[in-house]
Image (cartoon, rainbow, N blue to C red; front, side, top):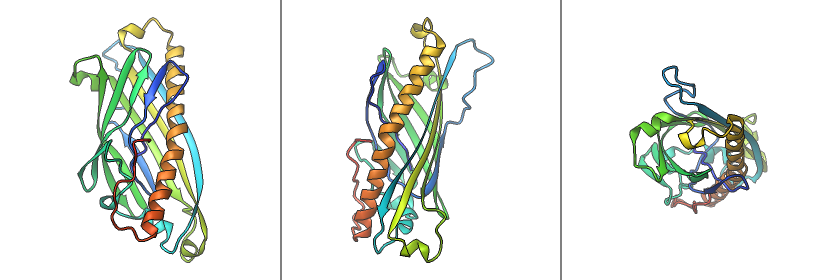
Length: 242
């Protein structure tokens, strides 16, 4: 699944929400190929931002069990926001995450992710990440100045097995999300103390998770209800909010 960020804040930045990706009782891990570590061959300062959030919601279970819905293959995802997410093939998606204004820079990450199915869910792995910065010509070297990792564990009462899966009226859907971003500090911002930049960046990420996670869980519940009622269209239900 993709947990995609959303912003809205009173910090020195502003955000425009983007996608919604439907997902499942699963462990989601998105990570760039490069580790978020300073380069020994460069003196360019790097800032590291991180945030974590745990959220849960109660779901009324219908005749078709929630756990069965969570085990649907990626090819049947429907909470895909057609405005922000492109399906490359059954298991690969291109996600236009968000436009973010951070100080005087506007950025929009573009993620290519692959969904790997597992016995009780799936894992989502980041294949590549492009960072588009408005006001600057596209330069492949931009991607070398940015790295990110994210783990989002979505679970539906994983301790319940056997008969309990189908007899429990209500189930709890939970999301445990952690995200970390490492980025080279552009020259215009290097006069600002690193503590100020990192504090602002962490504030952005926390605001992202605060807004995005509840909306994401709400869309999962909405899609589950449609699926449980017999809707087989699997049409995109996303509205660009997430």
